[in-house]
Length: 93
Image 1 (cartoon, helix red, strand yellow):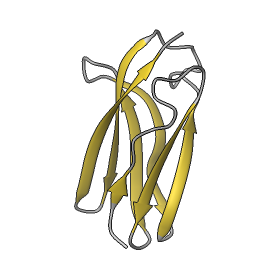
Image 2 (spheres, one colour; image 1 turned 90 degrees about the horizontal axis):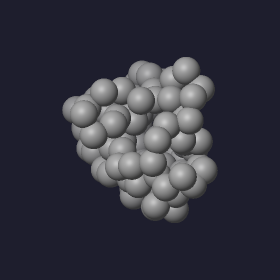
Image 3 (cartoon, one colour; image 1 turned 90 degrees about the vertical axis):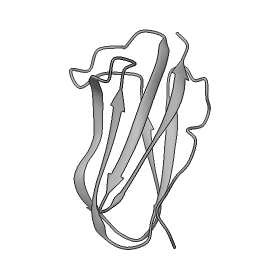
Image 4 (cartoon, helix red, strand yellow; image 1 turned 180 degrees about the vertical axis):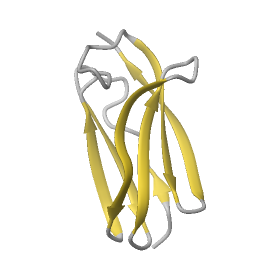
């Protein structure tokens, strides 16, 4: 197994999307959604100890204060050990 971040599904999405990723071993892992300006919109995982294998997290199009975010392009970034990858997704309200 290797680190990997998949494209979210569905994309574009409304109201929820699933972000899947793979970890080769148990390591602290963060998954964060950013707006186009690079500001954090939603922290889905913050240095969580997840086991090796495939994982999926749903994002409901809400920010960290549980408010609906606007339609647009967002980026999600997986950071784990020495791995970091970012992909983009589109929310259409």
